[in-house]
Length: 202
Image (cartoon, rainbow, N blue to C red; front, side, top):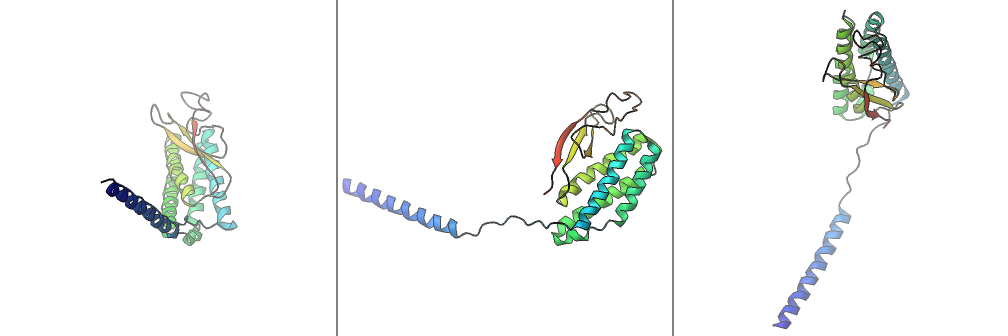
């Protein structure tokens, strides 16, 4: 009986070693999954994205000052800029990247055009919220290559529990929804908010 047990143990050990060696060879020979390749953008494309952001930051600054006249002009300027923006370079990447980016650009343009036609600064800020909510994923989608940006949030931009986000080139909170001349809070809520995310060059 002992001989049978010993023989069985030897066979089990042999099988375990054999299986491990076969498994190891299989793993070694399996092709490694390649990371997705992201093409670098040319200078002209990156220059256009910088211009887009500068237009956006102009709108933000006018909203901080509650300057509705210049906010409208800046929004119209942004809509015109976006109607001419060429993102064909993204076709070097996957079709999904180009299609998603095109969708975001169209949505930003729609919000900018709407903002340019508003009379109420509250409605302008609602459109700015829409611009921001589309610009943020647009920058993520195109693999933004510029300076670090910050995705910031005010939890009460349009009242209690009615928050809104925006993009900033600085970690400092300068709230475009409350601004310096809020009808209720005046300038006391100018720095209300927090950084939720950062957009770093990829």
